[in-house]
Length: 68
Image (cartoon, rainbow, N blue to C red):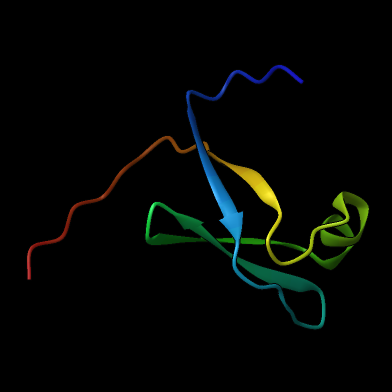
Protein backbone atom coordinates (compact mmCIF):
# COMPACT_ATOMS: atom_id res chain seq x y z
CA UNK A 1 0.00 0.00 0.00
CA UNK A 2 1.23 3.50 -0.80
CA UNK A 3 -0.17 6.57 0.91
CA UNK A 4 0.45 10.30 0.54
CA UNK A 5 0.14 11.12 4.25
CA UNK A 6 3.48 11.87 5.89
CA UNK A 7 2.42 11.25 9.48
CA UNK A 8 2.43 7.46 9.70
CA UNK A 9 3.23 6.06 13.15
CA UNK A 10 3.77 2.40 14.08
CA UNK A 11 1.76 1.16 17.05
CA UNK A 12 -0.14 -1.69 18.68
CA UNK A 13 -3.91 -1.95 19.20
CA UNK A 14 -4.61 -1.77 22.96
CA UNK A 15 -8.34 -2.51 22.77
CA UNK A 16 -11.41 -2.00 20.61
CA UNK A 17 -14.47 -0.23 22.05
CA UNK A 18 -17.40 -0.65 19.65
CA UNK A 19 -20.35 1.70 19.93
CA UNK A 20 -23.56 1.77 17.93
CA UNK A 21 -21.82 2.80 14.69
CA UNK A 22 -18.32 3.97 15.65
CA UNK A 23 -15.45 2.18 17.36
CA UNK A 24 -12.70 3.81 19.40
CA UNK A 25 -9.37 2.06 18.89
CA UNK A 26 -6.62 3.10 21.33
CA UNK A 27 -3.19 2.52 19.80
CA UNK A 28 -0.04 2.28 21.92
CA UNK A 29 2.79 4.31 20.39
CA UNK A 30 5.95 3.94 22.50
CA UNK A 31 3.96 4.29 25.74
CA UNK A 32 1.69 7.10 24.50
CA UNK A 33 -1.86 6.41 23.34
CA UNK A 34 -3.44 7.66 20.11
CA UNK A 35 -7.13 6.87 19.72
CA UNK A 36 -8.67 6.36 16.30
CA UNK A 37 -12.43 6.75 15.82
CA UNK A 38 -13.45 4.52 12.91
CA UNK A 39 -16.63 2.75 11.86
CA UNK A 40 -17.50 -0.68 13.25
CA UNK A 41 -17.59 -1.83 9.64
CA UNK A 42 -13.94 -0.76 9.20
CA UNK A 43 -12.92 -2.68 12.33
CA UNK A 44 -14.56 -5.79 10.88
CA UNK A 45 -13.18 -5.33 7.35
CA UNK A 46 -9.65 -4.81 8.70
CA UNK A 47 -10.03 -7.78 11.06
CA UNK A 48 -8.65 -5.66 13.91
CA UNK A 49 -8.02 -7.27 17.29
CA UNK A 50 -6.09 -6.46 20.46
CA UNK A 51 -2.33 -6.77 20.03
CA UNK A 52 -2.34 -6.18 16.26
CA UNK A 53 0.58 -4.18 14.89
CA UNK A 54 -0.89 -1.25 12.96
CA UNK A 55 0.06 2.10 11.49
CA UNK A 56 -1.73 5.22 12.72
CA UNK A 57 -2.13 7.57 9.77
CA UNK A 58 -2.68 11.20 10.74
CA UNK A 59 -3.95 13.58 8.07
CA UNK A 60 -4.86 17.04 9.23
CA UNK A 61 -4.84 20.50 7.75
CA UNK A 62 -4.51 22.21 11.14
CA UNK A 63 -2.77 21.61 14.43
CA UNK A 64 -4.07 23.60 17.40
CA UNK A 65 -2.08 24.61 20.46
CA UNK A 66 -3.62 25.48 23.82
CA UNK A 67 -1.93 27.03 26.83
CA UNK A 68 -3.29 26.03 30.23
